[in-house]
Length: 203
Image (cartoon, rainbow, N blue to C red; front, top):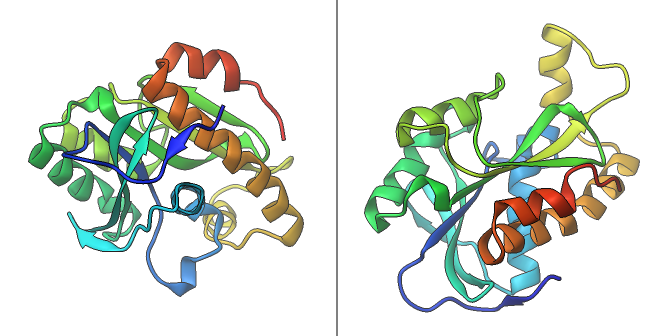
């Protein structure tokens, strides 16, 4: 299913954006699952995400025959929309071709969910993107980071910005391949096909 090409030609028709926080402090934290997804794509595609542009680390790639820009905003999570909005406006990419990959504490680790649109669900990165794109109608892949007994309040903050355990990292890595397939399905076959194949899938 994972039929990527190594390099893009021409201006991108899609943005694929992973959300996270920059810096070594946050490198392996649960809140950086979106960054980890982009890094997985970058390695799979042999498409480095190194160029600093649009307040992000960026890299071109081809996905399902379409030119794509991979992005990791360096604005910190709560301002992610600044980077996404800037790139979308520059390339005149409509929201329905802006695919966001991000962590979701309400989905158990080892599962993901593809959505066509929706509210932020309390995720500040998504809230910022909604604000800067002016719509909730953009596709996203929510990467589960939740635990069986979810913490609350300040404990939840500590959990989200805490590091994955080694066992959790193994589960996450197995899911990143499905995230990559989801990106290809959304671009090549449409959001409904991605939802049909991936929603409810478990690692």
